[in-house]
Image (tube, rainbow over all chains, first blue to last red; front, side):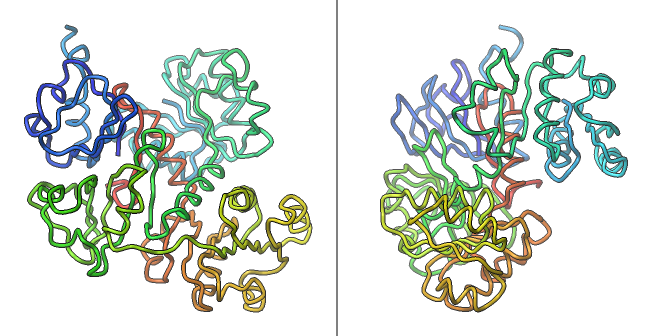
Amino acid sequence: VIEATAQEGSRLVKGTLRDAVLPDGMLVGALVRNGEVIIPTSSTRVHPGDNIIAVVSYRALRKAEAILAGPSSGAGV
Amino acid sequence: VIVCGAGQVGSTIARHLATEGIDVTVVDISPDQARRADESYDVRGMVGHASHPEVLERAGARDADMLIAVTRSDEVNMVACQVAYSLFNVRRRIARVRHNGYLEPIWKGLYASDQLPIDVIISPEVEVANGIVRRLRTPGAFDTVSLADGRVHLLGVHCNTGACSLVGRRMKELSSSGGSGIVVGAIVRNGQTFVPRGEDQVQQGDDVYVITERSHLDRVMTYLGHEEQIARRIVIVGGGNVGLNLASRIAHSASPISLKVIEHSRERAEFISRELGDAAVVLQGDALDKDVLIEANVQSAETIIAVTNDDETNIFASVLAKREGCTRAITLVNKTSYEHVLPALGIDAVVSPSNITISTILRHVRHRSVSALYTLREISGR
């Protein structure tokens, strides 16, 4: 179970959770936005700055980190 | 990363980091432990006193990003952090500190950045007591983790009765069938743990981990078919750091609770009796002695909490108390080799200081976009 902050420009904030096509073994369990808890469904949108609680299997951990990471950790944009 | 101490905690952390491709060196004073670390994993094992500058230099402190000090000794752990900071500029320093005297809030100034520079202090005894207090609050769950500063809870629950409304539902239908506000994060079935997809269903006999808002805990537990009452009569076995910390927190909780503490040592029993005053009855004796358990009235207690420093005493005291009629047992067990037999013995919830320490430390060693990580017991290591 990981807690992370949704990064501006990451794949997670581009559309709804359904659109983000999370890898097998990753699931977003809750969002905290401005102190308020949101238990998401597949049509929930993640905003940059949201605190995300996700369940990730060990095998999916690398992929999950890639989805959570903003563009700055990519090719130095 | 340099890990000081190749005990259960140190070597598990080293192995985790190594599997992620991180360069790890483990330092231990015992040649045997160091050699074992060196042989069994993709890590370098080194013999030496973990706080000596020369040893840390040989371990590669000049190029290290992080030092994790988890030797048996608080003092060695603290000095190792100081040496790593003052002489080698190691950027992050994590230490395990157990003794209460170092942890009192009034002495917190000790760890300011210009003093004893430890970024993260892990104190297993305090975390164990926190974990047990959470379990007392949701007695139907076998595991609880508090997330997002306590706003969100992760609950581990057995779906072993027909009363569990999750059984037979597809995950994607949950929110439209009374299960709104719940996400099933993981399912444990036949010893295998998986993260469910929309099409998956919970089956009777599964263990599930659900994520929910704290304010909805009671409603969610009812939905899952668990309506166990919060314990009013509690027996604690072991008056060490964990037991005493726990007893004083239970004593100060809002609801009136009848609390008994069984402690083996006469001296310690007298000490905790003075500390706790009227809040608890302290009995001096052996918790494996049936007469002592009866005197503590375990037969009418809802929960026994066994937290001595001996795994076997904790396990057997729990089993004996349940045989006498105690409803639930929360048991401290360090050895991972016992993990699989404990449910069969009737132990309802297991707390493991080493697991807690490992997952607390790993929480701080992640990618920078991830602020925290918790390891579910059944998933760990796989």
